[in-house]
Image (cartoon, rainbow, N blue to C red; front, side, top):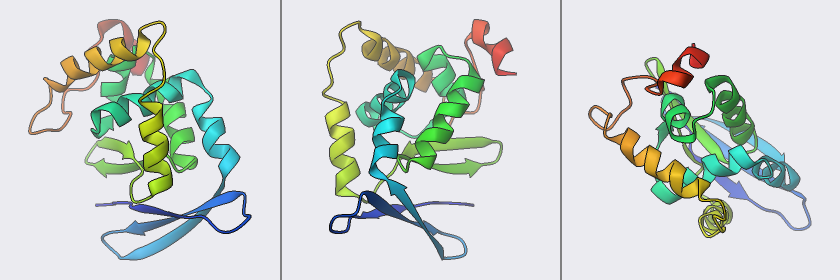
Length: 161
């Protein structure tokens, strides 16, 4: 099983963040340097901000099908957004059988502070609250704390295939 754990080291006047990723099974380490601008660019897109806010508020791992049902966006679109968030160092992923679970990157005060701030952003149109309500409903379909049912939104199911 692949498991990543990230830590951030900021150095002097550097304009980047170094993320050190440890792989649990073979104890290897990978270092990725990400420009700070990439993190804020990733958060600059409304759907990606909704994903990060949902995950920060709930402190839950989430799979793609749960995001499809919670955000009412097509699978292909959310998949691309998750890739950008992973590449920017904001998310970690773990594959479990056919399911991939995403969680906020941990182990770095800088990111924890950023995630906490995202939860305080105003919800002027109510979309964050609506996402949260749909996600809380979606959690009731988990088996042993894990998603095992796939996309449930009938209108989006055909787009997810």
